[in-house]
Length: 316
Image (spheres, rainbow, N blue to C red):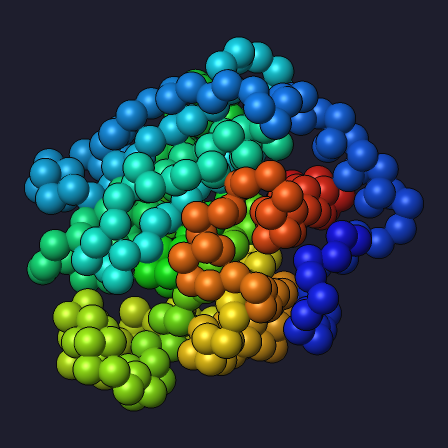
């Protein structure tokens, strides 16, 4: 099994593991099945600003839209799809802010999509999670038209986008609205989020501007804050996709929130790994993902490969 980093949380039965020769053969077969694309291969936009919902009001408010990237030369077997969810404090950001990610994931044999979601009030984080779930559903239904595999979708989220990706990956109501479940996702990658347990995060926030940011997005109702917290929705007896959860530098709140979510997932029987990146900060982890020689990029790509091999070995 690939090493995701020097720091790895202790796991239990849910930890991803590729055991035995059969799984190794599956991994090799998957690697050969992925289209070969050079690291500097050109990437083209397959679809731009696609509305993922038929709700005109939601679309007009900027919700549930995506951009889709793929290889300049189409062909080959269907590609897994990576759906990126940008950050920005739940009120800012843009799905166009992808930097080197499209080229890196396309070079690895994937399609790459970037989701837009409603930012302006009165949209809540739950509304934003619904937008991300709608983007997943659109990809499930339409990825094959663009050379993708709608049954192999991975979420990658940064900052507030990590919170939304985690919410979609844990709260079964969001994907359930589209006839899907969290376990239908191939895996979830979280990049330095700190919003997995919002009542705890809001209580711990010291800076006035951070308290204001959280209150603006999540309001003052503790029950609404809990319902918008991914950790609330993790419980035994439910099935979840594998999680790879990054935290950076000396950021204590991100470490505590990441480890708490991972532990809750493992206790519930899921698979979750935390990775500490001491030489990254909140911005560089995101902006450098996909660049040549980037350590977190290698760990994310290895995670995608292992998740696909594990699902193939299990007959999914």
